[in-house]
Amino acid sequence: MKLTLYSTQDCHLCEQAADLLKQVTEKFDLEHVDIAGSADPAQSKILVEKYGIRIPVIKSGLGEELDWPFDLEMLEKFIHENNESV
Image (cartoon, rainbow, N blue to C red; front, side, top):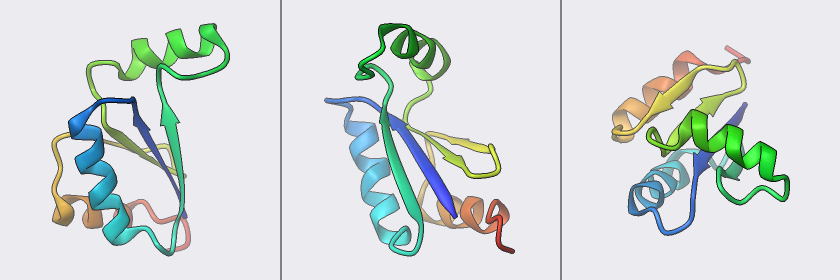
């Protein structure tokens, strides 16, 4: 299963989300996307417009998204419900 964490630097909520992900993602492919750090300014603009006030956001390989706030229980439920291999 692939998970994507949309976040940005110096975001304490994003750090909290990353810590939660570390507890459950050793068996998953996790991609971190810094919404403001793309080498392509146009791509950064799109990501900031989409996720800027929602981060941290976790996206499953199925395209479903989980916005902050979430706890470990909610994260585990999201992963279980959005696991492509189930």
